[in-house]
Length: 258
Length: 354
Ligand SMILES: Nc1ncnc2c1ncn2[C@@H]1O[C@H](COP(=O)(O)OP(=O)(O)OP(=O)(O)O)[C@@H](O)[C@H]1O
Ligand SMILES: [Mg+2]
Image (tube, rainbow over all chains, first blue to last red; front, side, top):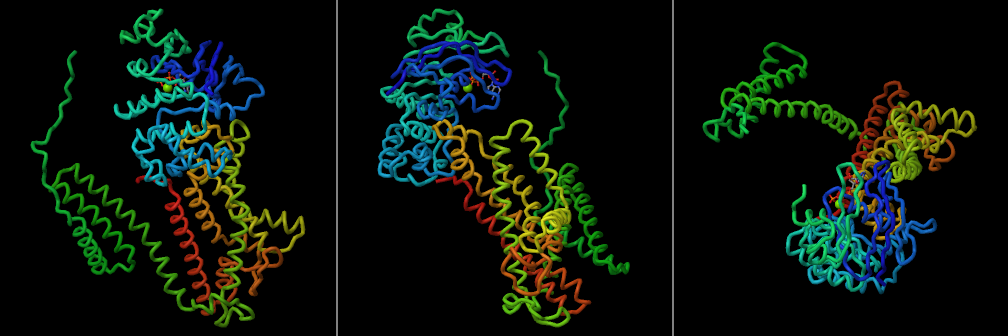
């Protein structure tokens, strides 16, 4: 199920502003890859190029290749909607649909795609909520609005919503930045479980978190403000945190930076 | 580095003398009494003058007392508050007196018979008759206008907010702006020359509806646009990231989130056109008999009925009474629409809480 991502020579623009330049990397299936780097270096931008959400931004443009198991996401016959069904995404701020109940939020992906059997829906919702470690907290109030949950619960609801459509890759943009340590821990545990089934990419500003959850870590940086962000290095997380091959990485991780 | 210190006057204590809670009321009652007394004493005829004197006294006394007891800053605060109140009352007085006058005069002939019968062959000089034909006409014309305007307005707004980029969107926005400013008589004349004089169709409720939709479409576009812009982008992205196509995202996520506000906007637009007289005068023509078919032949409508009873009755009291009663019905209709709009907005608002 989980797929490998091969990026080569990827450059992304906002109108005329080049946000990231010439990024190449491989993301292994059934593993967690963490992106770290200073603010504004293009981590979110790069993440959004991996499921073609970048082009949703007005003026967003991409050059280069992203291969998902040998299929180029930016090929001329590729349907971005199909790409997003395969590569799911969790955002920095929890964004449940305010008009929908908890149940409907989780079912939204299936319902809105029109591809579901009524009888399966209950099972899928229960399975996804259990997968997101939220089932026990909400099973008695599935028909209540999703916006009535706490921030951490909302974020797990969004994760449940994302995994309900069975994507093959899950992109997470700072999923814990608005959460308390306990919810953060719950989501980190969850990531550990989810990697059995999905390929996971996570952006984080929290070094400990990157060290705890990821198998591989990529460090991004930018030469100066206004310059495009670049991939400095990507390696096993242990190596990046103990013995990185580039000095800038070590400086950033040890906090001797800027 | 040294910090430049700005001299600050600090109060010696955090609590200070305050006017009692009831003081604004006392001052208000006092100034109204004083206003009446001065008005009576000086023999001023106009009640408006009395009121203005009272208002000025209210603001002045509030400031003087506030400054004396509480200090200048609090006094300014009190003056601002009292000015807001005075402005509010000035705005409410005409509205209240309008509603009072209409109810008082309209209630005389308003009964079930009046609501369920047409004028028939009652001439405008004699008492009797009713407004059933006018209510029917207004409902049909406004209903048709809404049927035309809402889809066009909604789709235009969706285009502008969700898809519109570049020149075309700018042009559409510009024309919507221009349409907002079209006087209703011009809209009426346009349909008159196009539909009736050039294409040769006769007077009908539908012709009126077309003119009314010219007035209604820009209002619907504008209000819908504002509501759609209020939907956070994150919701659209959340839906797109689930692999939902854009049109479905708009249909299932964006519109449901904003449907309350959109409905309110549509209802307000309906209320706005329900009272339009000029296009109806030109295109629907008026008819004392019941004509249930809006597509052929002259119809009646409430604003037109009011105008006819007033202008074409030679000053007969019976006709004036009917005009007031019809005005009361029209105001009630619009108020009910507004209430319904509020109800829907509250009912459909995104839910929060547990
Ligand atoms: N919608 C946008 N329009 C124009 N420029 C943008 C937009 N979003 C981001 N940028 C620019 O692209 C660059 C990379 O931004 P990005 O959001 O990818 O950074 P980031 O690494 O995710 O930062 P952070 O850690 O603060 O989230 C920045 O220079 C930013 O100003
Ligand atoms: Mg970011």
